[in-house]
Length: 141
Image (cartoon, rainbow, N blue to C red; front, top):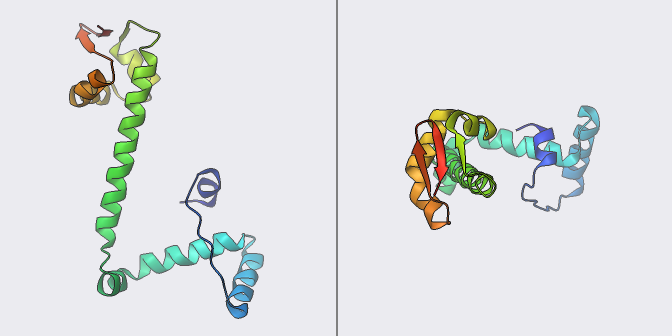
């Protein structure tokens, strides 16, 4: 993840105390690389995690592949929830729309939109939005 992505997101923050030697080394690295001390620490930590999967597993019981899979599942779930909210908000103002046009508005393929409507139609109904397909239109009932 780039430092620009980190700066613009709401990532969790952790405060650490460093002894004088560690703080001096981090400060010198930051100056040399033109980065903040937090960016340097984040890079060091990320590099350590990437290069030490065996230690993570043997000492801490953490399997990197499993962590990545769990993060991906959470991100997919958040994305689906965001998509569902966008669909609900869109149909507050619209009675029907062409499938391709709505997919374009939601920045996804028509197939993905149809898969979402198929898989999450019941959830949309629970949230008060009942949709149907009539020809090439998605219609609110």
